[in-house]
Amino acid sequence: MPPSQPPARARDLGVLIGTLPTGPLNAITDVPGVRVGQTTIDDGADLHTGVTAIVPADYRGLPAAVAVGNGYGKLVGSTQVDELGVIETPILLTGTLSVFRVADALLTWLLDRDPAATSLNPVVGETNDGFLSDIRRRPITPEHVVAALDSASADLPAEGCAGAGTGTCALGFKAGIGTASRRLSNGGVLGVLVQANFSGTLTVLGTPIPATEAVGEPGGNSCMIVVATDLPLDARQLGRVARRAVFAMGRVGSDFAPGSGDYAIAFSTTRSAAFDEGELRGVFQATTEAVEEALLNSLTAAHSVTGYQGHTRYAVPHHLVTAASTQL
Image 1 (cartoon, rainbow, N blue to C red):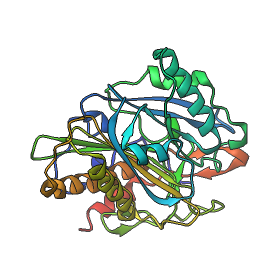
Image 2 (cartoon, helix red, strand yellow):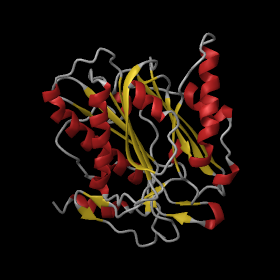
Image 3 (cartoon, helix red, strand yellow):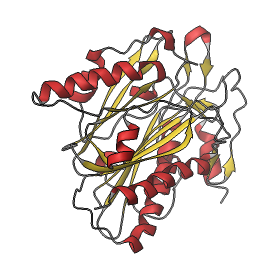
Image 4 (cartoon, helix red, strand yellow):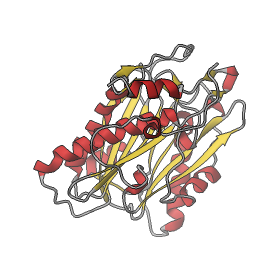
């Protein structure tokens, strides 16, 4: 068993991704108006799950798009986002079998705030945390959802074993929630939050770090990526951004297994879409850099967990990550 180690962000371990500068927090909450709230369920035994809420300040009708890498998953509300090119609600993440309870609770929260509403499209994504958590118990309650929504703040979100990432694993190690951001030369900000739970071989700056103790876990299990920006992108352009977010999973070693649901949702906090197509190159770079760093943060910030039926997933040893960063 690896020795215990304090959580750290990839940048703290010497891993510098790309060339663009980060925002002040290096988080999705660097995008003005974007807040994150989380509820964590961890009983120290069979339950390791939770809810993560991404809450734009004025979410009704924001330009948005969804990209699907592998469609083996449940992303509630995605078809209407595809059809209309907007989101109407906050974006929530949770465990697979709790996704419908979370969607219903989100709908109730929204109806309570809009007595005139007769049609709303809750957007809720998931990954399967059943290796470490008793997923059949579906422990998420409306109170957990409301707590995540009402606690949303512009602070640095907790990473690793927090919220919807409490029981997730990736690339043979314990993973969870990760976030990162990039500032562009035109003054815009792009931020990312991930729920990492997929298979492959962890790769840090091109150096593979195979997991030697990852046994008993099926391949796949999914990844949710949320991209936010204040740049005035329209839904079509955001679709291009979302696809690059999925592509970026390959930079950390995803094998894009057929049993994995890999999704990206990209939205803009600016409704007046008027972005020069020729400037998308920088946006794509910001996206791939931020997603790569967020995915690494989801791993380096996590701690080892023993959960359901005694299953254990260990945190990636930080000295291996640091060593990889020096091999360039």
